[in-house]
Image 1: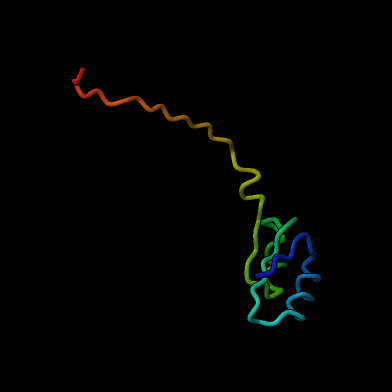
Image 2: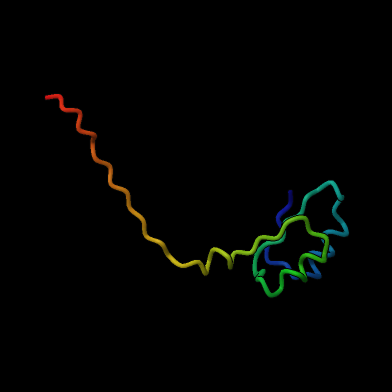
Amino acid sequence: MILLDNMTPDEVAKARGITPGSMLLEASGNITLENARAYAVTGVDRIAIGAITHSAPILDLSMRVTPKKTGRA
């Protein structure tokens, strides 16, 4: 797999055109839900959209572990 990072849709399409079909291509970087279709039509195999995780709200979790009481001394 080849990662195409921070490329425009035109550059991704050119990369797909010169790369053997047996090679998987993933487009990443500056891809949003709004422009994902422009990347999808280039023929790239995978699209990574970081905005999905970058804009996710924070969830703070904690876990407390206490020993189980067995009744032994």
